[in-house]
Length: 202
Image 1 (cartoon, rainbow, N blue to C red):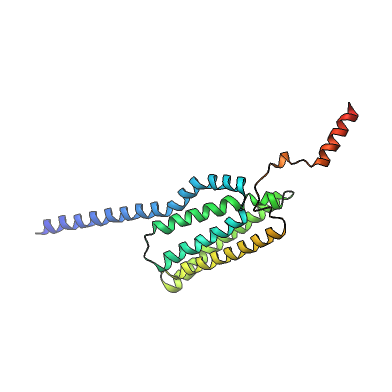
Image 2: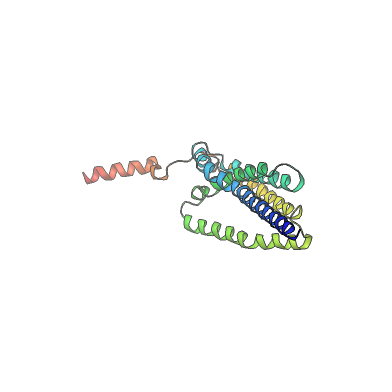
């Protein structure tokens, strides 16, 4: 009897560990989905932005997707893979248009601009996990408190995206326009100067 109980106990432990390992594998695969999707989509979305523009528009679409994603995670029973795919798409859209936009609005100080953006990004990466932990400790669960926090952040992102779109329209629509090669941008007056200078030297 004792041997049977020991064998049963070992079997139960083995099954529990196996299920736990499968759960961990499933969790890691689920959490890696947005990053895999971003790795695949980002170059194509960037190419679209280069050819057709619409950067400020996409900067509004991305947080709108994230609002939907975190609303589904916090207040629905939709399979997690669906919002994870939406999160990957939103991240792809935002990353593909926001960084290249720097050279369009600040061509003479790109180093400083990228430095400021990286600084702001790392401030968020260092403080938001602390805020999430605080919310979790206060409510003793992640849902819905943490998702409400992310919905609030995404809503702020949408607000800034709308402001960016309006401002870009007033300034000529540079962000929503197609990209041009900076090396190939030579004004007609500059061409005339170059031609006259070359004629002088000849």
